[in-house]
Image 1 (cartoon, one colour):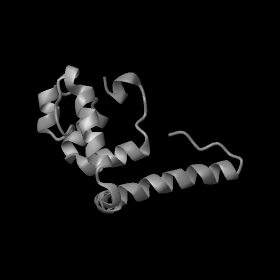
Image 2 (cartoon, helix red, strand yellow):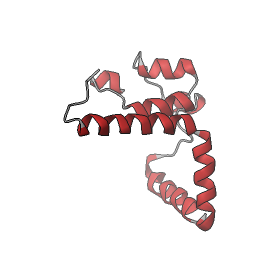
Image 3 (cartoon, helix red, strand yellow):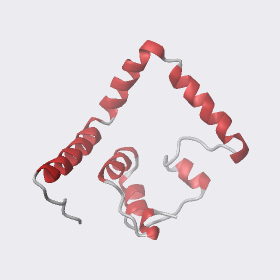
Image 4 (tube, one colour):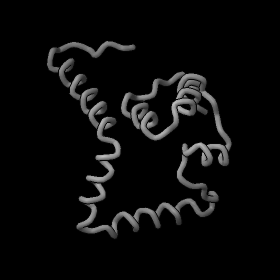
Length: 113
């Protein structure tokens, strides 16, 4: 079930990451139409990176965790590369968080959309 189907609002950061990763039409269909995709469709539309059978999920998760953990000192390089890919998205997230802090410091509640 999508956020729209549950009546939930997608956080700005999550929406920004989806916008950066997905084509405009897939992003629009997910966010504004609440379109649901099969596993195969989600893979074809780059919503997910890979498909894993449920019984193999934890094994694959550990493999990926070990892969990232083995970067060692190179993890800083990985972090910089990833940041460069999502730089605008990170800026949007930071600005949103700063705005929340500003509202809190003013003793006011952040306006709800």
